[in-house]
Length: 28
Image (cartoon, one colour):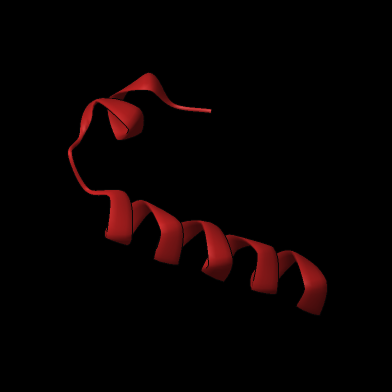
């Protein structure tokens, strides 16, 4: 996990990215 990402005040964006990452992993 990147601390820089957590430092960013983008909860919605982080959540969406997490979902996308999970989806990508599922596709693989």
